[in-house]
Image (tube, rainbow over all chains, first blue to last red):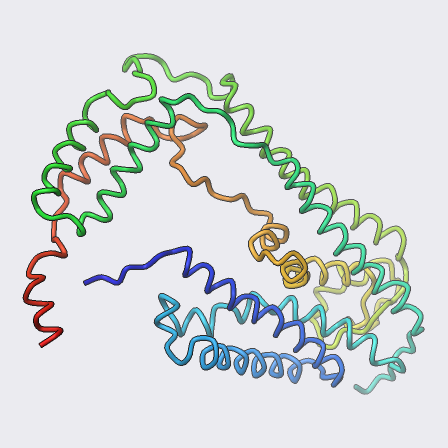
Length: 104
Length: 256
């Protein structure tokens, strides 16, 4: 028996994940800026942070059963959003870094 | 870093960085509202054209969901659909097979579609160009910030426009680079502000949405007769496997 999939529901789940990742990337950017992290430290901070966020989405929002909500859960949750959210992170990082580092 | 840091005036941040972001966010929101207003309402189509599209859709739905029918029902529907798809009953207009294909540019409906596309593109490009010109003109000629990550020298030309210091580290950039960072990075802000991720993605990606119904007889679309024939062939070769096959055994198994 093939699973019966209703595409709008999948889409709505994707939007919720996207929203979580949006907020996470902005907040991580602010965090990296406040800590005045530079170059590779900032990017690894982002990677670790977004992966923790995804893990929490996996555990809390999907109740550890992501295949109920996504067609390809591991890829959709952990890998798809990482690169599309980098620009938002960089923007907040640059902004807060510039604001915080007054005597540079 | 071995070289000493440049001393940047902290006032630069409040009078350059924040205003640019602020303006870009506001312009983005304004743009999304204007695009919404400019969207043409649904047009009144001829009933035959609608019927043609919906019949084709019905055939496609049948093809995808045939499992829910019993064999008898499936055969009935299949015969009916194949017969109708091969006849001209549901065509919007019966075309003369040896008529020459008309020039798509002279067709009024094509013109409308082109006009809408042009409007959409204008709404995308004019504000961006204006803001870029504004940033370039208004905030030209000084370093506004230090990026938190190093870049290669290839970016120097682009990110340090208006700064005549050849040996300056690429991490010190002028206002135009803040404009670019904003251009790519504002999507999450828009989507949080508007509460609609799709509209926000559209603002940044500048992509057109797909049409829900198959584009029959529209500009560049395939001929209806071709689509109907293809659908008929698809239905012809369909293998049917009903979900009701052996359902008694399965239910008994499950509840045994």
